[in-house]
Length: 509
Image (cartoon, rainbow, N blue to C red):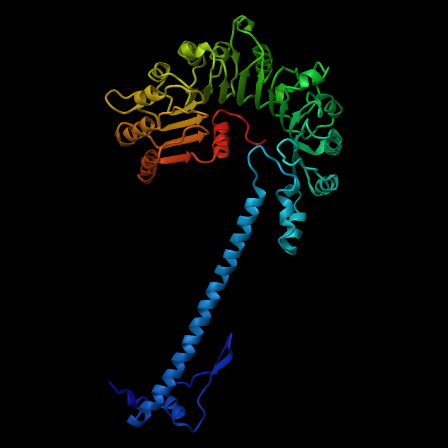
């Protein structure tokens, strides 16, 4: 094999390379002809001892230039990260500004801030009508009282497409500005898709009557009827929604007295209402498309229950049902029911199983999730041992009840009640005597028991006594071990919002 020195093809001379840096432009150029450096690069001659120093200086200069290039590359790599961090900070500020506490609405929230970020963001936000759709005005929870600008509202209405209107008036503030604002919004009622409104002695049901036959797009309604309204209105029935051809979701809560409302119930997919049972029966008999119902029975005495019908009301599409009185189950059949919430404050809760089991048998349904309000251990056992298809259990405690026996009953030791449970949720509101330690012990035992497939757990606490640090540490250990555990113990508003979803209250208003 020939030695390197015997090769006749010279090494190609290096080409000129230019690099821009913060310090300017440097070039790596070919050495000048006639120099020893050029001779070495242009031939295969071996360098002599006297060339060593020259080669070292050339290499040192090359290293310096390579280091400069490397630093520049690193700076370029960091530049997008810095820009990304800036963007993240902007988005975080926007998120904080755009998100408001549950139930509190602010006209100046959401899209207005977007127009002040930069010209591009302003142009984009103004070109998206959906960003301006929600107009939320709450005169109640404002301290000091807020004076909403009609001009601001008019601007938002011009920019918006379909409208989602949230309007809550204050009976302690001047009625004039509130009525002007409502009339402005009502002038665009043909664009309403959602309406959440509090009816009071100022914004009375009579103001809604002119909206009849003018609500073609209205899909969801949530009414809150103030306790003061009964003394200030002579209206016998509210019928403005009866002709709304798109209304599929309706909620109404009466604070003191019941106001009859005519509704297109045949369209309903979901409804929630506190009313006498007779009114609920009227709705249930006509609402053949119901998927979810929240039935709160109010404004009636124990003797006001009608006779049981020969045939139960058949709700073939119903998937989720809340009833405030277990006796109501005697009137119903729901063959496809998946979730049932029984939060009964009457004496019938003591004999809950006598209503629950016939309902399940009559319906031939496979209830997956059962939500119970402050159940006794005896009631819980009676239900669970006869319904093996229940795999999810939610317990909602909202009174000073003794939960120790409930958690002890569910503990996986000896004979295990309902070993098939994959989910156990606990919600606590305004409690001052809740047994968190037995709750933790119960979860630990089921998590470790081979026959128990527990995968999900949750603890929501709204007010009252909080778990101890040792209990929280134990719950965190279960989460670290793999249990899907949700905990909200320090944010009452967030806990309350999550609870609303558990017992089928609407969460959009």
